[in-house]
Structures are given as C-alpha cells and as structure tokens.
Image (cartoon, rainbow, N blue to C red; front, side):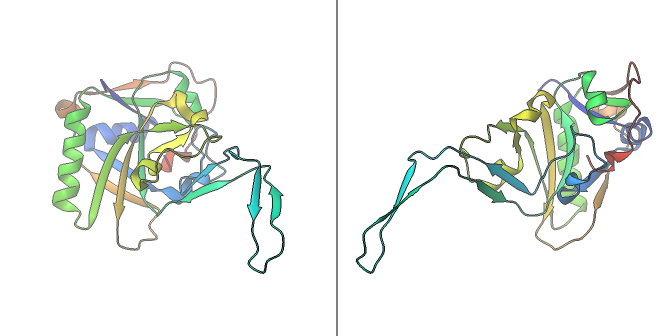
Length: 215
C-alpha cells in the first residue's frame, strides 16, 4: 500500500490536513438516498444469493408419512452486523472517483503507516472503551456463499460491483450503546508528519455533493 486517498469536499480535506480531523459515520447512515451510487450501500447487512448445490431438499416427517421432496430454486443468506463507525479511503488516486463520490478534492497520504499509527495511538490514549481496526476491503461475488463468518472480515467486505474503488476502511467501534450519527477524531496537523498533499478535481462535470458527511 503506497498511498491512501481520502476524497471529500475541499473544505473538509483542508481540515483533515491542517487539523487532522476525521469524522467517522455511523454504518446505518450509508443507505441514505442523498448519497451517490458509489457511496450508498447497506453497511449493516451482507447478502448472498448462492445457487443450491442440490436442487432437491428432502424433509422426513416424524409421523411415519412418506418423505416430502421440495425443489429449491433459490437461496438467500444474510449476515447481520453490529453498529460501527466508518471512515473510508482508497488505495488509488483515480480522477474518476471524484465523480463517483461527488467530491472536489482529495488528500493523498504518502505515509499511510505513519498516519495509521497516529490514529491507533490517539484512540488508545484518548478514547477509552473504543477500538479501531484498519483493512483493505475484500470484494465478494454475491452469487457464492461467504468465504468467512469472521465479524471483522464481513465488515471489511463489499459486493464486487464496488471493486473499482479499491477501498481501505477504518472502523471505529465500542461495546457501549450509542445513537451518535458521527464520532469526531482530531489528530492534529498531518501535512508534515504524514506526507499529505491535496489535489483538486480536474474538472467539475457534475455538481459537488455535500452528502459526504456519511462516507
């Protein structure tokens, strides 16, 4: 992972670079209709539609009556996830992602390791009861059964239709109940410490959205 890229409005990118402000969005908010298609997803549910390995299921009643043969024409598997908070980045700088997310600026983090260490150290020292996890997203084919039942693996997975985003996600979570929509984290200035630069969207072929209070 050579770089991490955060796409957002120019105002929020400047706050991110100058003050180290990260705003983690509650996972339940990602179904909001005002989000772009590239942002919107159900982050509390992973759904799979595998083909039945055997098209016939046999039920054997306990009362001695003949077995019942039922044809299975489709299956739906769902994994329900607990609430968590999310900060999304990408491992690539791609001008197409400005429009995908409705954004006009991007912070390119040249030292991802240093940035992630500062974040982990800050959460550990200043946010008792909270934990942070970081991982590149693994994209799945919803036509197949999930490869894992590990909770964090599922949180860091998405439908393969998003795979061009090369998402890297930072997950903030706690055992305590909270109805907060956002959790702010302030690391202090990042520019000199983490080799961060800001790039602006080359062309504004589509209006910039303010929906990124979510992503």
